[in-house]
Image 1 (cartoon, rainbow, N blue to C red):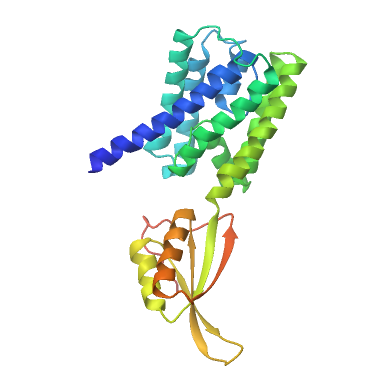
Image 2: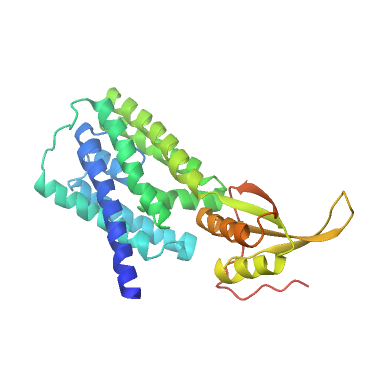
Length: 287
């Protein structure tokens, strides 16, 4: 079963990466626009370096993976390594099969719009599988860790730098399209991807607190904090369970509570950032 799960996971990652490669090669490359990606930066570099876009993308992704391992540690698992290598492989295949590919729509702006929405589908699949396409995602995580810049903003900043770099190789129209495409790409990513990955802080008051605590710990494999709370109406002391969960854990938790205590008092808040000690490390002792 583990082998089948791994094969299924790699298949999904491969399909998502293929979608991204299609967006890059057929909608981005014909217009030479460099939109917030390492592939976009490669489009600029091919004007100065005698290598193909696939070769440059492979080299840059490898360098960023090494930097990511040294700066961010185990966050970059096999999924990111797999997709980072697979993307330039797909691009190399397209370069061999479809050399000098023309614009699919005949309009540069329409190509940019199509690229943005197609690449967002692939990225959404990867993010929902706890993976990424490497490249600028690694740069964004490094900026997030050391400069405390939100992931969406970090990706937009690094992407805008790449868009402006097209000024070194192409005309003003291409630069403007690159900047507009990067801005549009950031809006789509923020709305459809990063907003979906926000955590939720769930506060629960229920007489079934023991069952809820056990479900959080043993079924969701998450943590929780229990506070003493006093109701203002009767001044009765109760216990409030507070936990932070992702989108899928939140759905499971709400379904469980609806089953055992539909009348539970629940408040939910969005959490944009969390800093905590990894569960893989020895338990921290408080004096």
